[in-house]
Figure 1 (cartoon, one colour):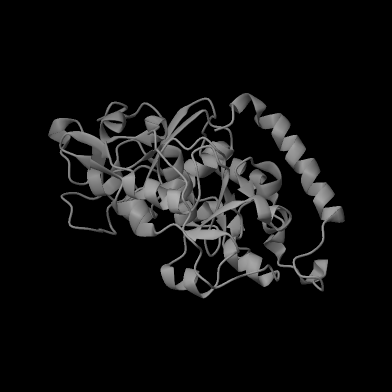
Figure 2 (cartoon, one colour):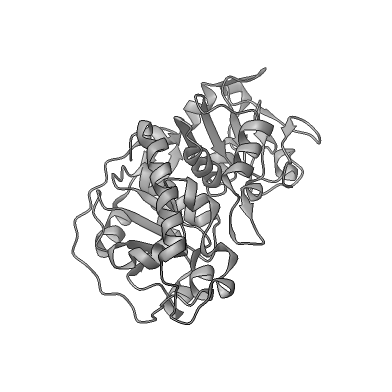
Length: 335
C-alpha cells in the first residue's frame, strides 16, 4: 500500500485529474450527454480518496485495469465489464481465515489461486466492483490487504449499475484463465483477532475505539442472529450502522465531508488512534474499515471473528460484553 505521507499530495493530483477528465473526457458511449449520465458517473469520494475510482476514471483506464467482480455468479455470467474476473463470495468468506481455539488461522490458498487465474500478481493495481458500493466490495478490498497485496486495491464507486446505466461496454462470455503467480504474504496489521480485542477491553469499557457496524437492535441484543451463547455488544463499543456510510439513493459512498462528519465529528474518532470495526461476520465491518482507511486512519483493523466469534466466548475468560436496550452509545447521523 502507498505510504500515508503521500496521501495529501496524491489527493490533489487526483482531484486535478478528475477535473480535467470532467472537462475533456469522452463519454461512455458516443451519444451519451452529461445530462444522461447517472449521478454517480463521477463521485466525490473518487475525487478525494486514494482507494476509490468512478466510472469516468474507469472509462479512461479500462485497458490497463485489473478488475474483480464480486457479484453473484449468475449476474457475472449475464454481463460484466470487459477484463473482469469473478471473485466469489464463498472463497472470501469461507476459505481463508477463522478464529479457532488456538487463535487466528489463515489459509489463503484458494484466494491466491483465484487471483492467479485472473492474471493478478501481488504488485498489480486492482479495481473491485459489485452491483453498487456495498459490503462485498469492501470485504474483498480488506481481504486483499490482509493477504499482503502490494498494489493499490480500489473500489469502483457506484459499481456495475452505474457503469451499465452510463452505456459502458459490457461482455457476457467467460474470461479466459490466466497464468499469473500469486503468493500471499499475510498482513495481520489490518486484522483484529479476538485476543487483540480482548486486550483492549475490560469490564469498565474499551481502551481504543471499537465500532459495532450492525443495527442498533443487534447491538443491544434484541435482534439475535445465529446459535450463539450471548447477544449484545463488546463492552465499550460504539454502534455505527454500516449503512450510514453509503448513499443508497445514488448507490455510492457518501461524500468525504459527510463521512468526516459521521466518523470524526459525531463518532468522535481521531485518525491517530487505533480503531477496530466488527459486525456479525466481519463483512459489514469491512465498510467501516475501508472508510476509516480512506479518511487517513493510521491503524484500523477488522475483527475477523466479529460477533459470530465473540458471542461464543465467556466473560470468565476476559471477553466482556454488554446487553440490553439503550445500553452503550449509538451514532445515528444518517440513520
